[in-house]
Image (tube, rainbow, N blue to C red; front, side, top):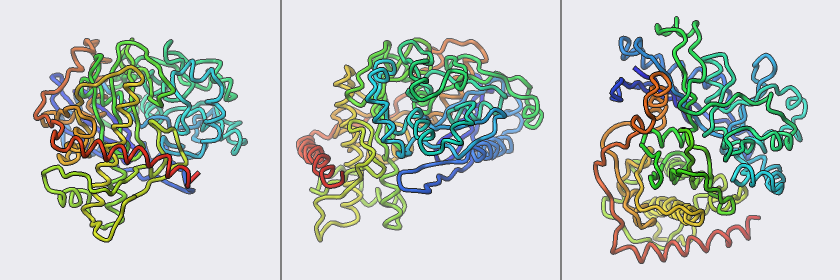
Amino acid sequence: MYLGLDLGTSGVKALLIDAGQTVVGSGHGSLDVSRPRPGWSEQDPSHWVRACEDAIAELRASHPRQFAAVKGIGLSGQMHGATLLDSADKVLRPCILWNDTRSHVEAAALDADPRFRKLTGNIVFPGFTAPKLAWMKNNEPAIFAKVAKVLLPKDFLRLWLTGEHISEMSDSAGTSWLDVGERRWSPELLAATSLDDKQMPSLVEGTEKAGGLRAELASKWGVEAGIPIAGGAGDNAASACGMGTVGAGHAFVSLGTSGVLFAANASYLPNPASAVHTFCHALPDTWHQMGVILSATDSLNWLSEITGKGAGELTAELGDALKAPTGVSFLPYLSGERTPHNDSAIRGSFTGLAHESSRAVLTQAVLEGVAFAFRDSLEALETAGTTLTRVTAIGGGSRSRYWLKSIATALQVPVDIPADGDFGAAFGAARLGLIAATGADPLVVCSAPRTDATIEPDAKLGGAYADAYHRYRALYPAIRAVTA
């Protein structure tokens, strides 16, 4: 058996697979996000450990015999978080998360240094790790002075599991400290934020062993001590391993808390001006590009809270047939936006509201707004040299066929729906655990699932969607002008 642990923003998922990659069972532990000030987003790392314990306890309770046969563990996690430890590995403050935008001034200053884009292949976004440390130095200097190690969230779990400070390429590529083409820490970029490589974890590939399970935890869980822990991956690269999106030209669209349009690449293809992320993949000698929108299902969840109706209830009101855009537009910039705008200050909006704008009309506008944000990412990927001919849908929002029809029509590419199964980040992490433990061929293990159905773009509504997208594109500069 092989265990995948995925540390998300809202919870930890533990997924167990057998040697044939059949999912045996899963467990879950919940997490909350603290927002002490506007634009801030934090979590206590001790809560990650608690949620991981909860997820494993649930999985062990339901599958005790199978869990006892675990021979490898893989890790996946939310990216970019700044987890700061002192010389005794004590957490110095709550982790500053990926969707925290407090460091926008520091990010702009680092991005103005041409070495960052040259070496990382990316814009320095406010959500990345390096500007968070620059903010710490400027605003919490006493804490900054005590920083002995900076870990990404999943690698804090690794420290708890193994006692070692280790990370891997895909997650580390999102820090703004990694030389992404060379797959190593950059002393130059670390020095630019008053840090050095001694404060960084060591680096491995995602398929390699990165520590073994501590005897204390092994005894508690009834498994062998020293079980290999794979390097693992950042959440999107792990999802790509779960989906088999590891070869050039393969792509997926992820409808989670944030939204991702992800494309695997056989070579390093940076184009930071497009605001596309160019990161290392979890597999050796492989990279990927992705457009990222900060509020995907978060936009629908926001509307759900406002209306007092569940997300499923809201989408059910739209029926099955895709409708033409109504003229009401929604910008899903509830916490700023990454691709293509790199704008932490912009905020969301509805435009075109009228007396007849019902709840269903607002829901439709939210779904379309997210679909058009994916269209922005598609165009940014094309600017960066990647053309997509089809995508596979993953994430909680992909349960809405209406939303997938909207995305297919907005992107003008077919959207494949995988056969029933769990192919997300936890599954990808479990696959990496299997590879690290057995030495299996990553390309054989990380195969694509069978396609259950394909949603084609709605030809009749293509023109109406194109017109609505042009309105959507015109709204950003207009809204930006009055919110700057």
